[in-house]
Each structure stands twice: as structure tokens, then as C-alpha cells.
Amino acid sequence: MLAANSPAERAEALILLTSRLTELIETETALFEAHRPLEAKPFQDEKSKLATIYRREIAAVKSEPDRLEAAPLALKQQLKTVTAAFTEALHANGRAVDSLRVLTEGIVRSVADEAARLRDQDAGYGPGSARPPSSAPAIAVNQRA
Image 1 (cartoon, rainbow, N blue to C red):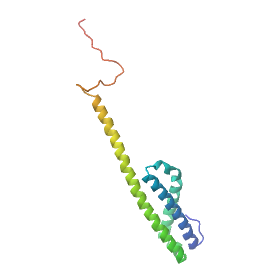
Image 2 (image 1 turned 180 degrees about the horizontal axis):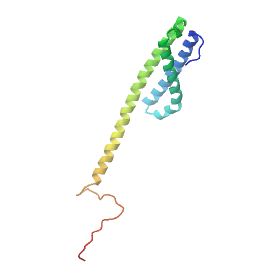
Image 3 (image 1 turned 180 degrees about the vertical axis):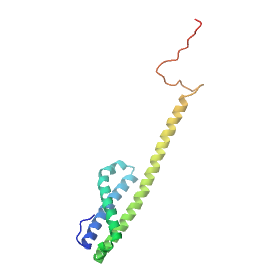
Image 4 (image 1 turned 30 degrees about the vertical axis):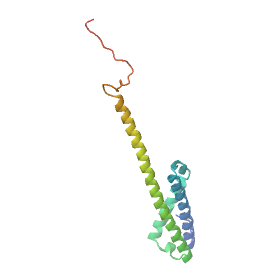
């Protein structure tokens, strides 16, 4: 929970929290869109912690609306504005994550298909087939000799 002694302090803290979370998500989205998702790893812990605090605080405000009710109108408006930006950043992030997932699944599928094709090409009999790898060569024994 946010440390706040009044609805105004709570609104200000929530504005700061939401703004920072939005900034992290927008940075992550840009990295995903640039196909550089590994560069987002350094700030994942901070994003996760802030998201947890945000979820808890929003749940508390929903269950106890008076937590923000007496905040000045200007702060309430600012909170609405940063919340709208946060929501848009989440939607953009979701689209980027989905695109990255589809791309990754396509690459994995292509690699698996190629591995299967190569495996199938090396097996079997006839022209173009290869002997399966083994540690010892095949030996034929003539028991009449």
C-alpha cells in the first residue's frame, strides 16, 4: 500500500506510481517492437513490484472510495489523465507482446520443421538415404564357414 496520510497525498503518490509504471511499460514496449526483448530484463523487478502496489491500491480505492474522495479536483483530474495514459500503454504493450509471441512461435516452428526434415532425409533405404549413426559398423556372420 502507498504511504499516505490524506486523500491528497494518496492521489499524488498514485499519480507518481502510475506515471513510473507507464514509463516502464512504454520502454518495454519499444524494446519489444524493436525485437530486443532481452534488454527489458533489467527493469522487470521494478515493474513487477510497482504493478503489485498499483493493483493493491486500486483494489483498496474501489472497496473504499473515500481514500481519494476528498482529494482536490485538480489531483483527481491528473490521476484520470495518467490512468488513461497507463491504460493505453498497457494495450500497446499487449499488442507488442502478442506480436513477439507470434514471431517466436513461427521461428520455433520453422526450426522444428527443418530438424524433422533433416532427420527424415537421413533415414530410410534407397538413393539419398544415409545409414543411421551408430557406434559400431554392421557385421554379417556366415555360420557355414
